[in-house]
Length: 285
Image (cartoon, rainbow, N blue to C red):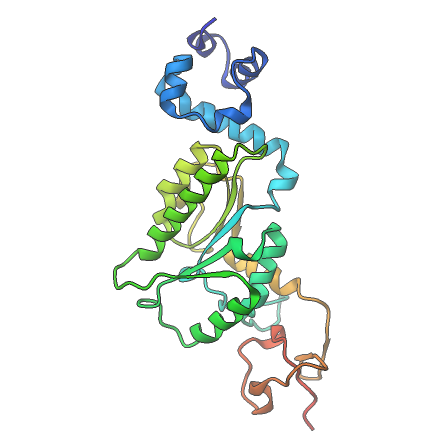
């Protein structure tokens, strides 16, 4: 019985079951096959290959959902579009504060169980100008993540670099023929990645997208194939809430005995990190 027979006699799910049962190809190997190989080896028409890969990815994601939702091989963070200093409120009714960049980086590593150097933070030093950028770079450097500076006056240089790096690392992971499909996290508010996201999903890559509330996930793929999506604002809020429990002074700032006093607080200047500031804030008489 040929592939064409399954196309007419069974739905897509039944075809995948039969495909495995007959031992034509293990599901893990499907990810490494090119479209031409699928067509040559199994006479699979072009209109069906895309749906077939989607079904394979869906099943694999469903089988490992508990792991994949919290685990990634790499994190690609478009810092220009999703900076750490967006103000968020820890609780309803409380004032919004900025989350320490180092806290955000550590939360990313803990949440997705990824090593420091596999969290890559991209920015264009020629285009991205902000008063907090120097201090933020210092915090991220101390957190141990990999800072990727794209110094160019050309627009979209960060987007191109991230897409190049995503494709290179995915190719390497697929070449290693691991049991798990590649899983990456993309943090951005820019829909320029839509084509790359579609292509990677077609190859069975699990993409966990973190996007700005103003940028819908539909802008990235045009379908419901992204199984794990978060908003950046919600992610920052979760990072703030996940901070270790500490004691606060009467003004609501952290008492971190043993750490240096906050310069802003000592000089009676509003601390931009608010309740998430990790320095000490002693009572002022």
